[in-house]
Image 1 (cartoon, helix red, strand yellow):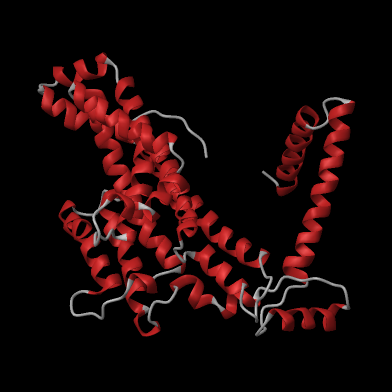
Image 2 (tube, one colour; image 1 turned 60 degrees about the vertical axis):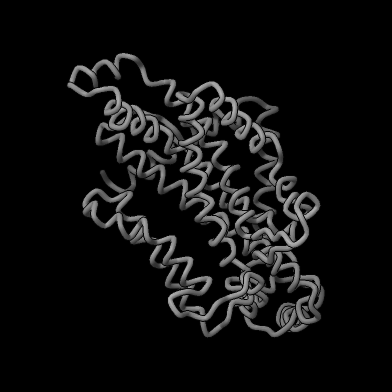
Length: 371
């Protein structure tokens, strides 16, 4: 098909869609024109501030303003992205010893081969031993083991603390989410009540309230009792994600029809094999889209631990913006940090979507969803 015909077809589709959704009546047309004009104006202002008049090399906020004034005239404003460049190490690694940066970087790189056997069928199953050993390897690299220099919890910060919280919390959420769903669906009465109570607590109590309990735990324990901050955060974030995943998996377990189970038994499978080879895998595969959504929410929820004093990227940003050199810089920090959080969430959702579509093409399950 000629390129001109392709563009003509795309233009025709856009025109028809606009007539149907934007200019259906005089009222719709007026509102659409106003909002389109406002969008174009805001986009032009953002482009001018964030890119055209931005400053990438400076040692302070005052120097950024001086460069913009000298280049574009007095009264002009431009983004001071130099603050991200000057504080790159602090934003990503916190106060981690600079000579030991290779350890968290290596731990992050090893995460990909550790996850590969779970998602790539061509990799031999015997490689799962590395997947099982990865948490211990990563813990030893980051915190100090195998003869490495120990690192204090207060030295962790920035996006390093986000990764340390997000990855284990997502694993905890998936494991306990499936466990709670099975307990509600197939457990004894007392088991069902316990699972329902746990899910209810972590569903209806806001995460900031749960995080606040970490700061007052000493009121309820004997003197001298110490609670691991990162351990408590992993528990709260992981269980909050598990509560959401449990509801999804239980719904999918209940949606498996008796006909599917009878067909599996007709192949000679006993009840135990039907459960482990048909029921649970089918429910898990159908739940992948919502599990990915819950994983992305857990990743995003790591940003609110700043409320209890953890110097994650937002905490680092507040600290830097209070210094003399970078005083009053706000938008540049949060736009940059928000962009990275957005990319991470998009990656999780997109990978899960592609994986689910692959399973669908291979005939594993039929489940429609969108991101």
